[in-house]
Length: 258
Image (spheres, helix red, strand yellow):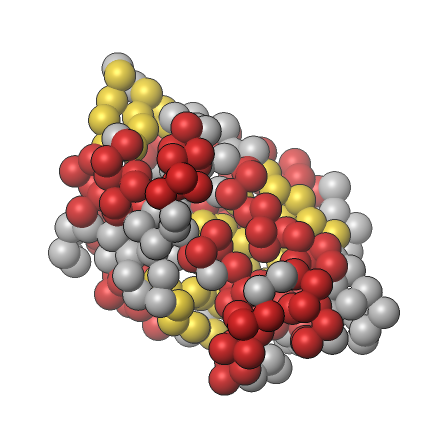
């Protein structure tokens, strides 16, 4: 198990090469239980949002794939993840960010999935109305920044910079805003019919400065699933602002033995 007290040293190293060297995550180290990692992005993003974490995992010898979530309906989004999972050779860690947690929860029962990881993500139970659950917690500021053109939704620039990517340099956040993938309104009405976290080893990274999903809601979902949980002082985009911690958690999931 990776000792989280050493994160400060890892962060000081900065570059992926230093991270790999300091943690011994090179491809020649002891093989992980899972050989693959599949990523699922959420709203206001695309598959490239996982780039920084992917680079670190590839340096450790893991095979990585980032799903391009169509953001149309939940069944179509789940199907896109399941197609990628079916192509994996051997045990696979399935990782979801934000709305991607809905997809992980549903698709995570695929036989190739050895563990599920949630990064500031939705984690509903089977058949649960996530919107109703979220309303039992304070409304996060980003919710007011969603704008629609008909059924196509996106986050306004002001909300994106302030409430979605608040701890990123403004120039980088503006680039991410420019490439955000719009979602279709019907996507938000979907409900999961199964909950992978009830039977698969589960891990959760709570973003303590999150203004898109209320941190206490994240803590509730992580606690309910009995997940191995870390707390990261980050915005909703911890996978970009704090990729070292997220990489550590994913590697722990990859090394997990049932």
